[in-house]
Image (cartoon, rainbow, N blue to C red; front, side, top):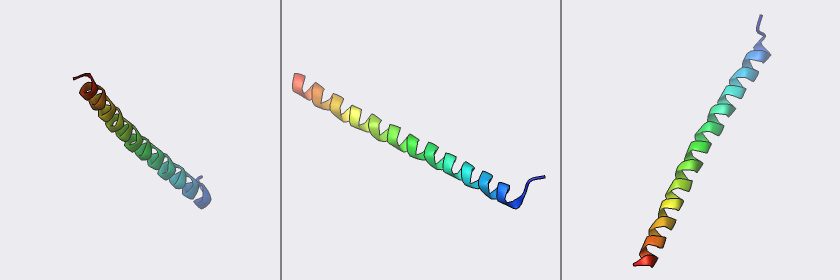
Length: 47
């Protein structure tokens, strides 16, 4: 049987996991934008 403390622990663990995944997606998205800007600067420099 699951105790009250175990339920809270699982809830906090799942919440933390979702937060990490959400932050990771934002970081990857931001990294993609930075790489795109760098590529644009390289293309401008070759013209």
